[in-house]
Length: 380
Figure (spheres, rainbow, N blue to C red):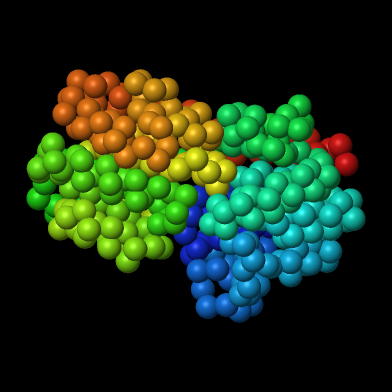
């Protein structure tokens, strides 16, 4: 069976959508007999070099210490590609310098290269300067992306609106992220957190500006004015103190639980104890899919999602979820109240959502990647 070398900027115990995707893809490939090696950073651990095995996956980590415009400067991760033994190089991007260097070195090695293009490089924290830098990089990186033998995007809507992918749509294959449905479904009998409230709203993800959690808290204030017995659960690490301060100013801090980061084995408990799940991301290229939507659907929970490229590809508005304008707390509050108080609508959405999530079963996703690997190796 083939040896696949994955290169990514982060991997568990680092927490996020890309980490979750890469880990699950690798684990499924291991089950099918592939030899999997991951070269990544030490994010999630103390900065340093590590060599370890995780669920049959060989993992090599290099220290991540320096950031520039939100970008980790870790070119060292790409250098081992020159010497590693592999049949296919699978790169996960886009991370400036790291992804470009990995593509270039892979081309020098004359090995088949697969690039899963998870998101555009973008920084909104630095205003106009950040936008200018992002546009310059995205223009330059098109030449590097073309070095890949196969480019994969996770949704059509994201690819079509990407400055990079829109230039190579004919060469881009759409393969979404996957979900282990049984893992989330079969844990519903686990002990769930005790929350004495009639309406429970859940957010799962990083607590970072582009996730729009501040918009959710502002919307929650409006919700509590209409539905006194409502409670908001926020799962994730990041700007907790900043968000707590906002909740205090709005007078809803006693109705919000910040759990911090939770291991994957505890997540289903919170999904199952909630009534609805919200992904309130702002209009940003950093939110390209939304794995939490699949997790919520697998737990038979209705979802409310910002209408932005990527996540909106999963949702049929009014059928398996609700789409709301990004950054609009009033519209988000209206959608939350509507879904919490309309039992028939909620039940209908849950039914359609569960049918939707079956399309994203990991077995289907892995099979598509296997087809790419086999075709590229035969061609080479």
